[in-house]
Image (cartoon, rainbow, N blue to C red):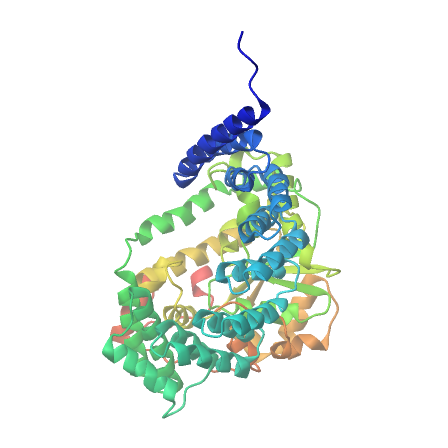
Length: 541
């Protein structure tokens, strides 16, 4: 008769099984086979209750599978086994981020940064979480701490410069960017960001560095080459050398356009599909079913049309919260719809309320007691009809600006690959026209008292009168702070961050324009003859 296995032998056997499961889990994890990895990690932990790697791996796998509540509980368990694990705190923070538990999320990111103070990605994510609580300014102190730990980390100086710039601390931002350039003198991205922070004057050493970067071709990638060309175009414009400026913008956009395939006709087809789906009959049948809140105000309009200016005027009011640009609308829609706009005709009242309530839950955390929340996300243009159904008491402000001024401003802005129609004048004109036609469609569908059109030129000509009109539409009383919008300390993260810190100026109205032969492709895209007069509202009539 054989004797029973000893506890020591049994323990060794369990550890061996746990080790085998852990090896299998690692391989599955590396292959991103999350469900199988989670199973193996769980088996490893069952066999060895002190195996930190198994619990951490299980928590990460659950996070990747979207099982967020389980992930949070598991990652907290991992932290109980090893309270000094950066990876555990970073994963926990990400899970809490996705659950929109912002306070706990910030605490987890901050704990991770005590373990790894100069981790760039964690600093970026902390900044986003702080922004949801309207505490973004705290990131500045974190960056300063990280720089003290690692003063040779050039990118940290760049992040600090971006942060200071967004809050209007321009001189400090320039100093921080100079610190980055002292470490990486030929960094084209740093030179480009610096160009947004300042107005160039003759003999400016930064201007000479830009010219040298463009001439020597020292940039290491297409993106960096584009950034240098855009920045040099801006520098030439500051110096009044407009023809040279336009040539740099042409080159920057040529370099960008050659890096991707794009069919502007297909993109315009997407806008046409919105108009076909959102019909008067559909709007009547679904109206009034969404979440009952009058706090949201959506600013819509083409980029570089003055949307940031209008948002800054309104957000300077003490009872108005400026959200800026955020993914919240798209996220709320994606929670209900896997295919937008094709599934819209099948939405129920419950679906619409869920979209509206999800959006409100995401944006109200940082709004405090504000009676209005301003959302100026550019893609709101695509969702205006659905947003009216999901939030029937929401208001919409459509900002318009001279079509040629708008498009030339877009063409002179480094937008990366996010807006592919912006890199070719003809394609830009075609898309602009189609977008204005979509806005005219929304204007016809939405109730008259829910939709206000404001022109950039009118705001510049009569800021007090237009501000009263905006505030009246939003249902808030007059406040003188709205006229001092450029003094507001709120963060601005759009391409207009520098302009919005200056008193209102009229130089962007009727901006310098290229010769007719160079402007021709844009005018053709807009549907305007090269010598044909046109006015601001021609394209939305």
